[in-house]
Length: 198
Image (cartoon, rainbow, N blue to C red; front, side, top):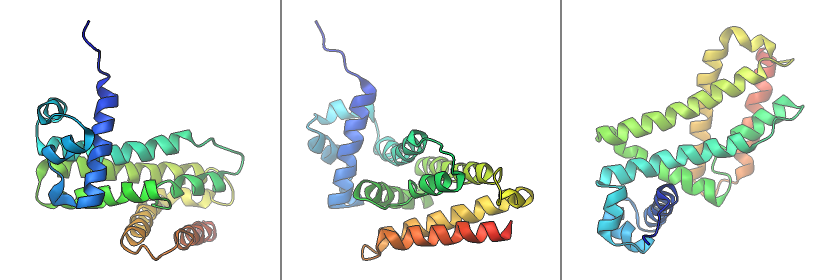
């Protein structure tokens, strides 16, 4: 009897192998052959899931967004909305080794978006999810005092928050000596300033 393969689990394992290759050896080593070897698969087998290099890269980039979304979805909403929003936003920052790898994958593969239309589409989709998360979280915050004054300029504040998250993430990824507490402190300061602006 033929063995049934769970394709989503297989694709996840392939993406994990691709992330390891990318983190260890860099973007130039991210090839179907190298990823197949890392995953313990035949190249032809990997090509069934990802027929092109771009398909593999796009999947890896999109996976970073899906992992972040899964973490956000797993956080329970408590009674302190400010704290909940802060915890959610922290999930978008590279504050631990797993999220750091996510950010490195996002930045490295995202750089290909400048010249590669396939990667551009994946990057734009992933980046839009971050923007939607920022807007949604601020919308939740604006429903609770003392943040209700944010409502008239919610879209503007959402864009600013995304810029902050992007910037903090970039600096943490490129400056390993920066402690995660630096980013969480800056995030708290921003949320405090929003309360005063409201």
